[in-house]
Structure formats: C-alpha cells, structure tokens
Image (spheres, rainbow, N blue to C red):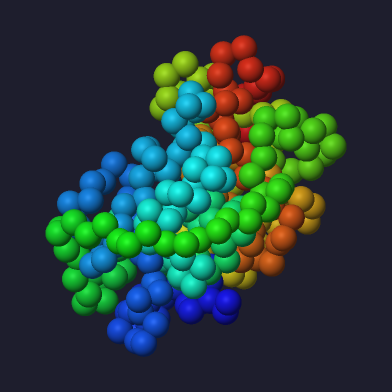
Length: 276
C-alpha cells in the first residue's frame, strides 16, 4: 500500500492535514520520548512507545534490544497498527530516540513509517496543542510483520565486518568515542572498537531539525566512505539516527548493531581502543 505521508520525515503541516483528512483514522502516532509517561504532554491521540519497557527485550541483560518478531508483532497490534496504518513517530527531544522505532519497523518489513520533523516541539510551535490526557487503548490491529534479515546485526556480524574492512560508524559523542569521557552505564569500558569511525548523532541535526539531505550525505560520505555501514552507539538507539541519515542520503547498505557499546564495551568483551 502506498504510504499516506512522506517518509522517512513528515512535516508538521502534512501530518496535521492528513489527520483532518478522510484517511486520518489510518494514522497511528507513537511517542517515544524517553523517560516520559502516558500523562506527559503529547500530541492528541499519541500512544506511548516505551523503549525502556515492553518495546525492548527485557531478557537480554542489555538495554533497548529488539524483541523477537512475534513478540513485537503482538505489541504493535496492541498499539492499533494494522496493514493499512501509517505510523508516525515523535518525541520531545528531537532527534534522540525517534529513529529507533522507525528502524525497528523497517526491519519488520513495515515501510509506512515516518518521523515527525522537529517532533513535539515543532508540533507545538506550529500552533497545535499538546495534551496530558492519556490516549484510550485502541482496538487491536492486524499487522503481520515480515522480518528483513541483515538490517539489525549482532556482535559476531560486527566482528566480521571490521575484519573485512567495512565501516562501523559510532554515533556516540567524540569524548566517549575517544575514551576521554566515562560511559554513563556502569561497568562499561571507555573507548571504541578498533577500526570504527565516529559520527555523533548530534552533528546530524541543528536546532531541532535534521540537516538537509546534501549535508547528511556529505557527513556520511566523509566519515564512512561509500562502502557498507554498520551503525553503533551506546544501546542501539542513536545509531538509528546515523542509519536514518544514511538512508536519506540514498544508501541501502546500512545495518544497526543492536547490542552496540552496551554489549561490546562490557568487561571481558572484544578489543577496545582509545583516542580519536
């Protein structure tokens, strides 16, 4: 089915017009604001997508890892997502976590997914309300996921990629990448994977907006060259911002390391180096 809205970014005005249009019922808005609750200010009708809770696999011992396809399918249906839905992901802190649900659904074969350009702040600046009333639980959807292999990868895949000279792009800050700044999660080593390169996700946006495509392409090409990319970060969340930038630059050879530094950086894990 043709997406109802532009992808992967949708402007506020396009979302507002579509919600008021004849197909507005097809739109499912997911708010992925980290640390928020369903009673925090949100776009009317938005549902919580809790990466710290049921939208991540809680059995791995790692934060924010991908649930099994059947588990995720059931959770997405519980959010009212059906075969004809168009999902819009938003958050308060654009752009931190909104690319993660976009990538998760992409790995499950769902293409009708957009990230609200500028997130909740842009919605409010455009004169639209944010509300605190909890959105009623929707009727279950009928989405059937069709997993796409290779878009989300594990530690062994990353080791093989590094050995083959492919590019691992680390979205953490430059200080964390260099090992100058300690990791925020206790017990993790400081530094980065041997052979990885650094492109902080914060450098792909400005004043609450993703950079223009030409600037994204320049940043991705300058950092990673033209070969395949594996994006990594602290826990697989902001790595998806790098993946978003690469996809918007026309790349189709992009993967995200699900465990990211929370897995690689554990004590006794694979080799770690420091410095730029």
